[in-house]
Length: 531
Image 1 (tube, rainbow, N blue to C red):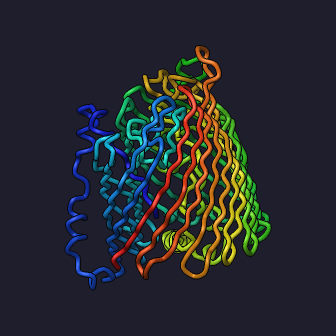
Image 2 (tube, helix red, strand yellow; image 1 turned 45 degrees about the horizontal axis):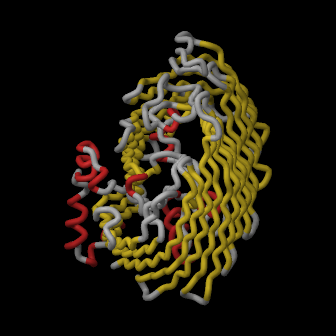
Image 3 (tube, one colour; image 1 turned 45 degrees about the vertical axis):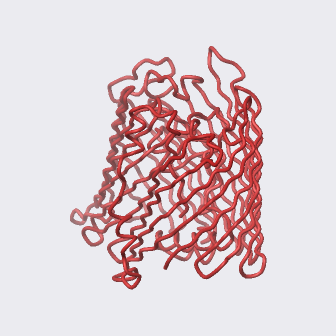
């Protein structure tokens, strides 16, 4: 999986807190191991260790993305890295670490080193019963949705902030059978994210438990959950218990209705604490799978703080897939960074197509999809929108429609999305520099289109176009918006069994609060893996 590295701002922009964040030693042991590990041990006992080296040169006519004082410069990156994979009946682990060195030839910014890591693991502690999931991600984020810099850009460090997010989830994914009556399953998830700049840390803890009757045409289920979120700006907590009746006339259809109670101290649109006592909550859900190629899931809840809902519809054919999703739920920055919003993930559509759809193991399926995208010379993510940077919990509504076609030589995709983030439910105050300090409601919409054509057996030509707009509503500001259009054209080729190279052109046109931003860049990349 390609990594998005966290960018430490150039030295002239660093505070003491940022400097400490950027200089913190990360996984030094892995780096040392990579330099000395014998190749014959790379595959021992289902472990695969792959050292890599990526170099990239970017020549840009506006490397600082400034509307008033653009600066031309060439950025040279040297990125050694190591990835570790283990696939076994009890362990599925994918981990990667890359220290990235950035050198600006004309010294528009100071040279710097940043660290990127991405860890995703699942460990089966007790057979078919107790599991442990871990996530650790370091990345860079735009300092605001109203800036010009795309979130995948490394050029302008003064417009970027660094984030590190960690998650650990012990869970009973198997079933604890309680006699001949019911089964019990539960999970406890702890997530924390840290950031440089004006934002602090956000931590959340979520417990989910379910007591469910044995399978029957008319069944029942009791769910309990507790979610607490803490940040430097405030905290929220919610507790919920619901009972459901489930009707399953056959294996392709399921209908459920539920009623229960919920309490919490989330904040309403008037910025006052919600009722601390339990209030009624009710909802319904449906799952319909008329054919192995078609699936529809829908759910809606009436809750004390707001209505929440979700919809997922997918249909796949031999070479095409279609998906439509809608979700309205409370979220926070940590959850957004672990499950990025505002981007198009090509895995969502590829996983519906063969040969990927028939793989039941998610890690193996992800590895195969990664290899396929690498062979096509296209990236996994299409970055269109920046996540909302805030220490508050907020209500987000996101809708997306995606269509993709995968052929022997041609791959095409089209996605349209709309996101509305409302600070009316969450922590009471927005910090200075927080996106919600500028606007209480932020609406983002746009579309992405991509096309890749394979040239012969070793080369491919890829085009992508992204158009996005972010608008903010507030009582003190009007017309707060940021528009961004990005066009990429990239020619990729295999230079050897383990070496790939590419050269491409990027054109960016943006309009932000301070004016119009234009950027044209030529990008050359060389990537080598050593086993």
